[in-house]
Image 1: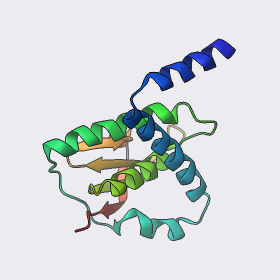
Image 2 (image 1 turned 30 degrees about the vertical axis):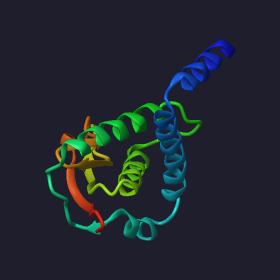
Image 3 (image 1 turned 90 degrees about the vertical axis):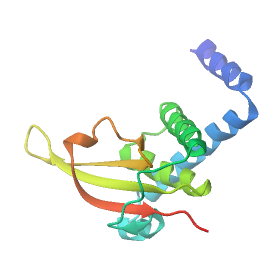
Image 4 (image 1 turned 135 degrees about the horizontal axis):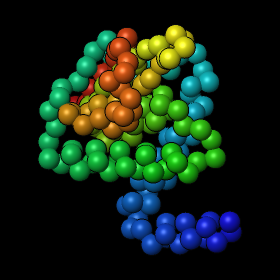
Length: 153
């Protein structure tokens, strides 16, 4: 067990500073988003973007690389936190990280029924044509809300 932890630390130290910074940012925002979902959604939703709007499906070449890096950081770091990171936590993290980079994105909220007939929910984020979080399950859900986070300037 101790060796595994030391091995992970060694791998982290071998990464370039930019990647380590991205991982630390993802870790911070995953924790922050975890705290935000404890608040009433009506208090959090204004910071997620314009309700019931979507952003463009176009992106630049520069954005593709950034989107891929943000997507990979959230996916990787969310597996190694001390807390659970449900889809809404990952989605809010993606919105915050993309806002910081002045990249437009849309957060989607969807609902469906599980095998026992219970209502379930899912959240995912798209920027341009790339799905940053939640793409694996999104097709099973009906979109009930969107939040467009437009770029400023």
